[in-house]
Every structure is written in structure tokens, then in C-alpha cells.
Amino acid sequence: MVHPVARCNRIDGAVACGHHLHTPMFFFLLNLALSDLGSICTTVPKAMHNSLWNTSTISYSACAAQVFFFLFFMSTEFSLLTVMCYDRYVSICKPLHYGTLLGSRACAHMAAAAWASAFLNALLHTANTFSLPLCHGNALGQFFCEIPHILKLSCSKSYLRELGVSVFTTALAFGCFVFIVFSYVQIFRAVLRIPSEQGRHKAFSTCLPHLTVVSLFITSAAFAYLKPLSVSSPLLDLLVSVLYSVVPPVLNPFIYSLRNQELQAAVWTLLTGQFQKH
Image (cartoon, rainbow, N blue to C red; front, side):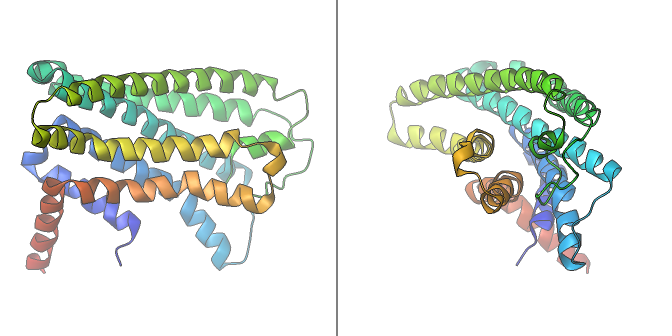
């Protein structure tokens, strides 16, 4: 069985080494795989360490670093999914302008904007959260440091500043969500106008992996943060945290590789080339 991190690394290597995969979609997919890998490496190793050594402690600085990097990679993933939605929109709705609107420089700028905005968002949240005094102990009851659980430990009046930042971030995330929905409405309208059934199937199949990943990411995150307090419990909170922090990054490479024959061929070529060297 292939480890998820190894799977991510193989996809990264396949896209980097396969020159025929140097297209906007695969360029953004490479960035998405890197953000997935970073997200997994932020939470899983520490959780495995605590489980193996039968401990549940983490230092204050390590907790702050974990919050920062987790927010950084998760924010990057959502930004990249929004950019990839634009890629699908242009390729289906404006195919004649694809090379102009999504040239190499434009793709590099969009990817850089996704990483930079995620960095600023993570830095702002981390700085605000860890500037709050903790008045209710230091036990999180979670397998990784997460802002909502840290806020529960802060003084009742001191978390209003972080709440304001969260509202701003939520508004931006909602804007991205509206853009994704609007783009897919236009994409489906364009696909339904394609005269041949084979053409409609081919156009829809290019969007299916992205739509699956977006749905998995949004539904898991929405359930984690919007579930009613009446159904909250320590075990449910743990399961929900695993659902949105571990499951999507692990499944994303499988979803894209299983639905894309070019990527499968590139991964196979990369693996066979490595075996031949040995």
C-alpha cells in the first residue's frame, strides 16, 4: 500500500518531470499537491508521535507554529481551488482565449497570489490568537492545535478581536465560494450547449475531479465549523477535525490521478524509470 505522502510526492514528480504536463491545469495541480503535503505534515506527524509515545503535550511555540502552517496550507488550498475553477471556466467557456488569459506569467502570478494571501491570512490569525490571554487552562482536547479550541480557553472578552478577523476571512472565503458557484453555473450552461454527447461527456469529465475536491473540502470544513453546539462532543469534534484536516488532503491526489489518464501515465513512467535505475 502506498503511503499518502509518497503518493503526493509521486504526483509532484510526475508533473515536474513530464514536459507534456506543463499546462496551467497541471501547474495548479502541482501547487495543490504541495499544499496537501504541507497540510498533512503539519498535523499527522505530531499526532503519530503523541500516540506512539503515549503523550498529549505540545509546547506553546510548537502549537503556534502548527496553527500558522495549518492555516497557511488550508488557505492556500482553497485559493488554489478557486484559481483552478477559473482555469476550468476559461477552458470550456472561452477556449479561444485560453492561451492569452492563462499564459505562463498569468498562472505564476495567480499561484503566487494564492500562496501570498494564505501566508498573510495565517500570520494575521496566528498573531491575534496567540496574543490573547488564556484564562481557562491549557487543555485543548484535540489532536492538533486549532483556533476555535484555543479561543475557548481565552478570556470571554478578549477574543472579540480574533472574531473580527475571522468574520473578514469568512467574507473572503464566501466570495471565493460564490465565484466557484457562478463559474460552474456558466460551465454547465456551456456544456449543455455542446451538440454531441461525447463532447459533453469529455467537457464534464475534465471538471469532475475539481468539482469533487471542492465539494469534499467545503462540506467537511462547513460541517466542522457550522455544526450546532447541541450535537458537539469530544469524540465528534475529534472525528470532524480528522474529516476536514486529514481526509481531503489525502484523497485529493487519488481523485485527480484516478480520473486523469495523462497523469496516470506520467506517474507510471516516473515509477518505471526509478525501478530501471535501481
